[in-house]
Length: 120
Image 1 (cartoon, rainbow, N blue to C red):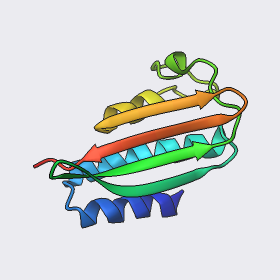
Image 2 (image 1 turned 180 degrees about the horizontal axis):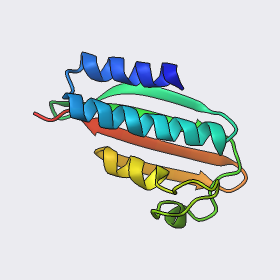
Image 3 (image 1 turned 60 degrees about the horizontal axis):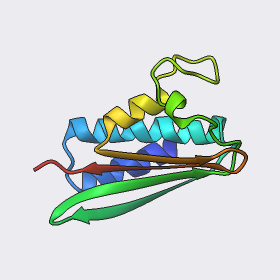
Image 4 (image 1 turned 135 degrees about the vertical axis):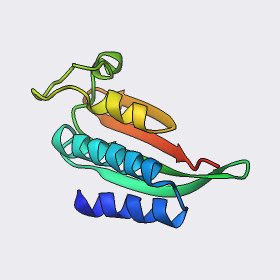
C-alpha cells in the first residue's frame, strides 16, 4: 500500500497538482487500494496521465476478482460497512476526486476508476 501511495504522490507532484489535490488523490487511492486488498483479496492498480482538452489529469484503475458488491448504491452510502468500519470508504473516496466510476459483478469482482483533474 505504501508503494501505491508513493507512486500516486510522485505522479501528482510531477503534474504539479496542488498540495491539497495531491493529498486528496493519494487518500482516495489509499482507500481504494485497501478495499481491493481487504474485500477483493488483492488486485491491481494502474495509473495513467489523461487529458481533457488541454487540462491534464491522472486516472487510477483498481481491479480485483473478489466477491464483488451486491448493492453498489448501498455500498456508496455513508455509514454502510461490510467490515465493521465507519463505512466512509467508497463514498469518501468519491468525494475526494473529480470523477468516480464503479462497476461490480457479484462473484466476479469490482473495478473502480477515479480521475483527478489538475486545477488551473
